[in-house]
Length: 361
Image 1 (cartoon, one colour):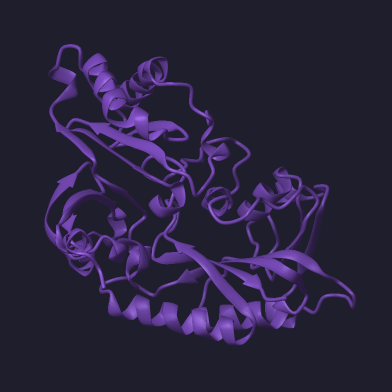
Image 2: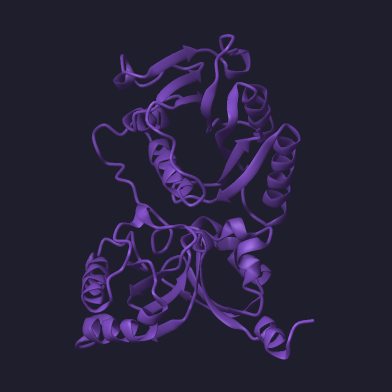
């Protein structure tokens, strides 16, 4: 039987920061309600400061996948940093006083408006982190992707609304960066399509759950045209068998590690004895058809092989439809020996979710 103190901790509302992608704006109130939110204040473009007596719903409920990132709000300083003298020093001293004794593995600070053309708060976040690192005892992790997903990090977000901070493991936050996003440059001359940024972010997100695949791993990509994802995988030293009934972008012709098959995915049959390390599916069309092709070809994956699957939702206008489709897809895959171990809505997703499966041994 829980003690009175345990019972109180279950019922006392806790302050929490939740990031809900802008594309879900029309159903944001419904999502927050399912998180047990008691009121809420909008911060930045996609963030909400809420109080909930059941924060586990943010992590474990059926609608958890609609929240890109979350953080317990253990320190909030509503202010306008731009108009405050000595903001960096005051904030840094406070963070050291409140959090240093808890020994976070790292400190990362980001902007509440990361895509704003005004760089002021991005620069402020960088400068504040620099001052915090001068004052903090030596931290074990300096680089975002070197974090242990299960150890606590001090994450902070700063913007014209103030400073908002808390400690939580990256896995519980659902992202390694403050705010959860790794922004990918899509303006480089060699970028073929937005899909390249999507798979780059997916591979980064995957670090929360398992080590990256080594160079030379063999991927099968279903519906590869025009080749944005293919290009990103090749740039990482992966081998790719790419399948599509339309040709790839001409810039991929002759690329080392690429085997392109001009065919309908439904007609493709790997050569006997072929075993792939991973599968990538971003095909358009009915999701039922896409998952059927994944299942058909999953028998050519090695045990423990990875599947990154984009679940295309016809349109997200409520919670019930996408959740039902998600459940059906996960259950269909599980019945065929594919274990769903992670799911999220990436920065470069639209009306879609990214699901991560492993082939059972």
